Length: 317
Image (cartoon, rainbow, N blue to C red; front, side):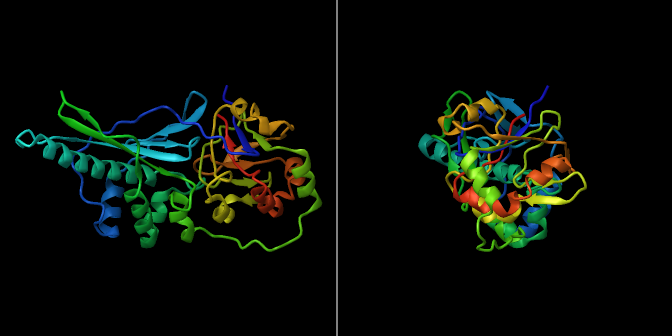
């Protein structure tokens, strides 16, 4: 039986999936084409299978056709492979040209993978890229600046070169930063901290939303509703805080013990059971009325939790 938790813990613990997704494709066009042409081309080619995230060694990863979304490690990865020109007598030059081609292919695969990332329970990144040219340009720029993981891999027997690229999901220089202008951001007033928020900060190390029966799906900005459909919290309104590096990025992980066993969790977390999930992708949360009433302070108190390093969402599958 699946166990699903949504956690707001005290610190960020990042672990990797340890899974490599390899994609071999023909040499693709340069990413510098116009956003309109690229969007039309990619939308025709991309398919997003309705598969559940996979769990590898306690971490939540999602394999796509062209790469991997690592919700635990807050990264998106893709590989590219190119064949050396057998007719080029200069081996060093042939290898260098193949490596450059592999990087372009990896960038294309990464861009396609990014388009499949769920922003919330109704929207993928591809929707924003289609609707906003500026978003396409910014996402493309983040992909072009993706960092290479390790050295290029040269297979002498096969005559190929392979590279792996990765970019962050929640980071000012990552995907969330590229999407920021399209998100509805609420300006948080300088209000006095409520007594409920202060009590939580003093008593608890985390809020744990237990969704063991709910089947919650990872997304960048999940929403929380009460049982009557009233929106309690839209985390995208706080995207400017979640974009920051350090302890306030979203993270999804499949083993609650990986978090609760850390020294920072000396105090007991507050456990809230999820009633059910909602939305097209099943990535938004519904709480019962009693739970909703007990968390009435959360929206106003969220900035303080973030400032205290106590805001980090985790899904445990």
